[in-house]
Image (cartoon, rainbow, N blue to C red; front, side):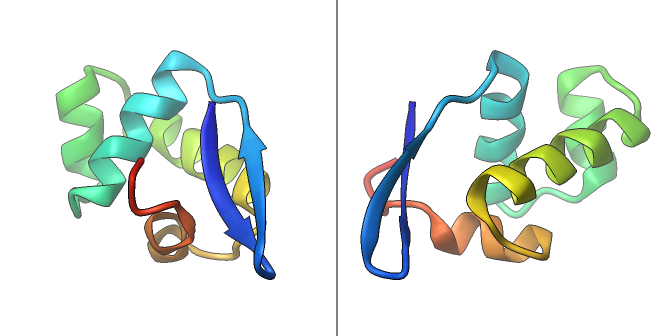
Length: 73
């Protein structure tokens, strides 16, 4: 479970284990290549996870994902 704010309203979304790992690395500022290396997956798979996260968090780019999250995450 992950919390974020959407237009001032607290929202909750369920993430898969891989999405959660990817999200934590995005918040650390990792590039897609570095995320792929850290998770031992392909860069294309990372792009897929990022697309899924963007949809879940209702944002249009990777950098917005980290800013959307509750600071306590």
